[in-house]
Length: 234
Image 1 (cartoon, rainbow, N blue to C red):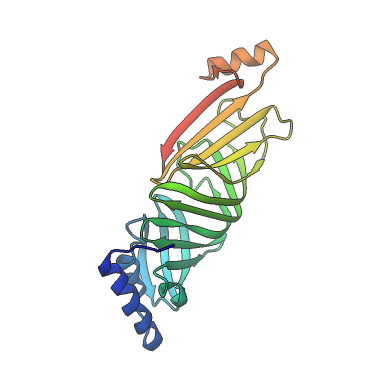
Image 2: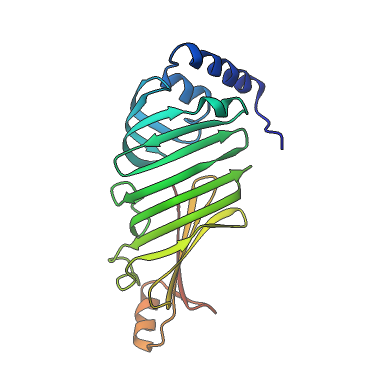
C-alpha cells in the first residue's frame, strides 16, 4: 500500500527526520507543519522539542485534555507517517496522521464531565487499548474496549449504571454497542471522522407506566424498543 502525502509535507517529514538526528525541533513547528492542529489539537502554550515537549491546557476538538507530555516517533517519519504520543494524568494515546489516514493507537484512559460536551448525556467515557483509523473520513479500523457511565439525570438513563462494549466499524462510523447488565437497555455510540457523534439509547419497557414516562420524555417507539437519539460534534 502506498501512502500519498502532499509533496511539501512529505519533504518536511524527511527534513524533520534529519533535523531530529542533530538538534531538537520545536514542538510548535511540527504540530503546525504535520497537520495536527488542522485535526483539532491545540493548547494554551506549546513548549519544548519533539523529543521532550509539553502542551499546557491542551484540547482536541473542544475536549479539555489538561497538561500533556508529547513526543514524536522519528522512525515513523521515514514511511510518511506522523505518530505523536501524548501522555496526561488520566490517559495515554498516540495520534496518527498520514495523508488521508488519521486515527489514534493505544488510547487508554478516561474523560469525565469536565472534558465532554455538555449536550452529550454522559458522565464518563473510558477507553482501553483503543485503536481507531479513518481513511478519507471512513472508518477503516476499530478495536478495543469502551466503558460509559450515562448521566443519571438524563431521561431514561437513571437505572442504566455502567455499560461496556467493544469498538468496531459500522459503515462510515466507529461504533461502540454498549449493553446494560440487564440487557434491556442498549446505548449505541457512533463516532464519525469529521468529529460528529451520535448516541442512541434503546430501552425495552414492558411496564406501560415506564413506557408512558419515557414517551413523555421524548422517546419514540420503534421495532427495537423505545428509542432516543442525541447528536452533536466534538
